[in-house]
Image (spheres, one colour):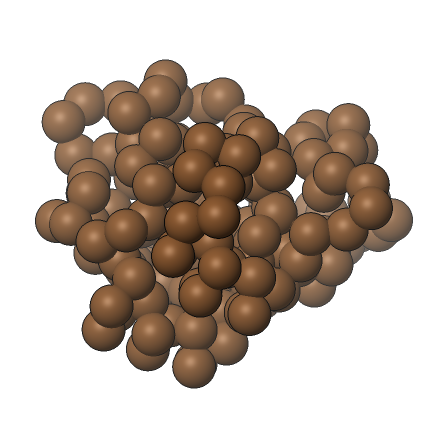
Length: 147
């Protein structure tokens, strides 16, 4: 999938981003590229109070999410309520409310109806990361990607 050198460079970018948050765009772009994803993002907070820290999703998807769909995001709601460090597959989370407006009018059209999702922090203000991908015949959360 990718080399040790690429992985090492990505880990270095992530550590650098924790010190200089403006570097997250580069790190998330590489995460998306390495994992063959539509895009990735980091959110801080919970529910309708969450805010976008950084994202590499298509600009049209970001605009649509901010203007309308953020209040319907049951996928991130589930991640934020769960324990930190657990990687959730997108198909598992999308199945929580199949045929919802969020799935039909946001996730599917923007090819973000699968992926990997994880709460990063404990406490009352969670930080969560998502790697969104299009739904395929095989689930996106392969052992190699989750690892």
